[in-house]
Length: 288
Image 1 (cartoon, rainbow, N blue to C red):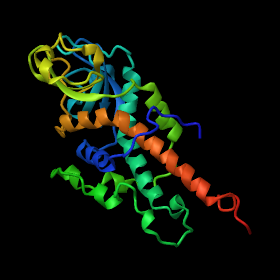
Image 2 (image 1 turned 120 degrees about the vertical axis):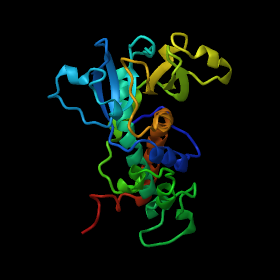
Image 3 (image 1 turned 90 degrees about the vertical axis):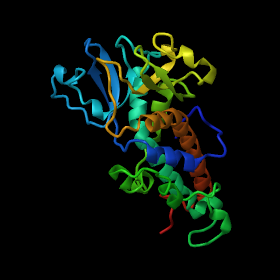
């Protein structure tokens, strides 16, 4: 298949935890785009508003751009909250975050489907065996019941069940986004901008509760910040209308590892199923 990930052996996989973060985050789809702050400096963002190439540049300026649609920014240069990760992969990270919102859904749904396949345990179609139950005791109904929100968006069908049967899955594309993004692990944390307002971030620096006094701009480790999901500094502020900035930061931080874990598990299960089917039962080898 030619797909490689940086997470080849993660066991056990917390599918319920992944599904819970998925359901608590702002519903997708998410898109990557470029806006501008009040100083006309670029802000690379992830938003729930589909990009429109026909809009003029002023529509993408702070106070004019749709602040209530922005999920996260991977590049902010405004005084008082500016950050830029040392690897300068803000475009790649934005693209990864954009697609992760759907990639995790698709990968979870495919794992549910594969774990129900008789060939996973070497049993012919139509047979039954207790060993066919998912290893983690996880099934689609449990994943679908993990949402905790009461707003209208949370009443929609579970994202996992929405994507059951979704084909084809672009494993190479997903793996490419994993490989191009800033290396994991990513963590969610809360810093402060120059005004002392909370700045909810995703960072490559492990949070340290003893260092909270050092986490105010310009002293926080701005070159470790991958993205921010809440920025309140005038001239660059945004807050998604769903107000799920904490949940979105948690989802984004975990997605950097979750996508690799799910990819590796999916590839492993597909290899087992393919081997158990044997040459006479693989597609294209059926006898007339």
